[in-house]
Image (cartoon, rainbow over all chains, first blue to last red; front, top):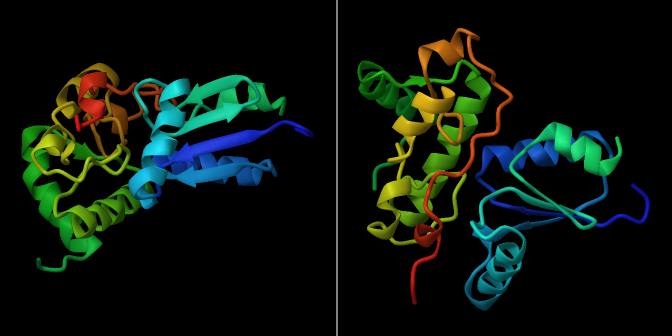
Length: 84
Length: 116
């Protein structure tokens, strides 16, 4: 996954988000993670708006891989998008 | 608010929910992680908001996603598991249903964001 940006929008308490993180870590994927439940005020609102652009329901995890959006921990879709 | 351990919460919920036909997932580690998250949310918000959903930090607004959420019955009936995978049906635990299925968010989009 060289040169491919991976962004994970997560909740710190969400089991599917935790499983997604474990999967990405296990696969050695470099990714950025934002835990929205830990944000407050304007910063939180800004990130929620970002998530809504990709996933109107703003459910978690929302994962951006290049121009692909994956909602939920879906190992097969992640593998395909990450070319693993 | 009284402090509660994960083990105490486990026993309390098991006794209350099993007679209603909702069973903890047989994946005990997953259940314990989810219960720990419920205790975190109880501490944070004063109510046990679903750990897999974004809280509005408003008990009334989040009533539908306070565990056990109002979507649990429909999700367990359709998929064998609730959205989080905390509560499942006996068939799920017996391996009679696919457990790698993605359970979509049933909460209506208009409930996702509290106005104002």
